[in-house]
Length: 395
Image (cartoon, rainbow, N blue to C red; front, side, top):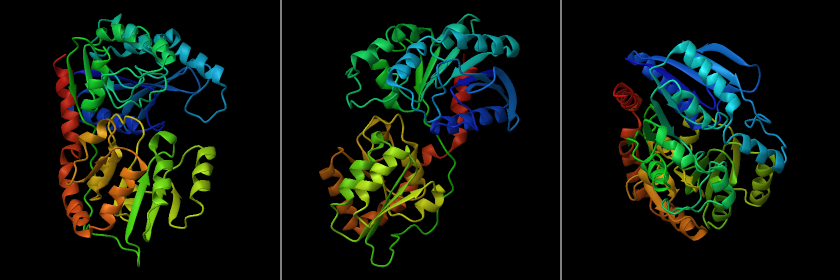
């Protein structure tokens, strides 16, 4: 067994997205297997502190940059640009990594999201001749926005400014000893952009243990023909506006349940364009199991290249088929006529797919019965944890 230092932007209870949830599962799972695990994450205040989360030693280092990016703020465009400029090589964060390495003496360092740490983390680790495993959860190493829109993973569609901010990163990525993609799509995207040349790699899918729901069937509410849902962050890249505009054209008695929160400005905008349709409900934050028990069909209309798309796994695990856009890792989860439908994202394609399910209860119910079985390989955390353990052991 090895001693593993995990480096990530955040660690629970600080959570920005699914990466932090998965990371905690991995850390605690590897600890149960017998590995000695330590976490290093950034925080807003203090200098370098130590606490324990579920028995795991967690160091938190104050982010040395212009502002804390995980709190809604009104930073100017110039200030944001300067933040990202410093985040190209934030040498002031490297000293925290060196300090923890000297103190903990890990056998391997597993790096997850680097925002805030920058690739200076790689250099700091390599000074100690310790193997580095880089886990790809997002597109941070390709663009400071961490968002990729182009569907052609072999074509560089980045803006000139994005390329400038990431100049030289691909060359420096060769110092990594092993790279893991949370989907084949994200791994291919990086290798096709010249990253991690000759570095051993593999795909390890994110997994969550989700209990099965019983008696999955069409959940009719009175004379409502179909209840469809969206759950997640309410933002432009998630395609929520497209979903609302499409649903408004659906000429049947249906319901659209929208769960999740976003910026106050964008939420207000979405509610404004939906206000003339009484079939649309904004639920805010809800417990996911209760949400899935109230819908027939989930829509994931992402406009960006989802690195994986854990929400699609979660939906299928609850027996709910998914209509998903042909974006990123979603196509590795959803299979046509098995657990949902993959569409080219447009109002016409989305309207056609929703209408199909509204008019074919038998097809919908058949896919509900198949949905959970179709994602069983994403529902065993032990498989994911063992895969990480095997990789660490061979370094």
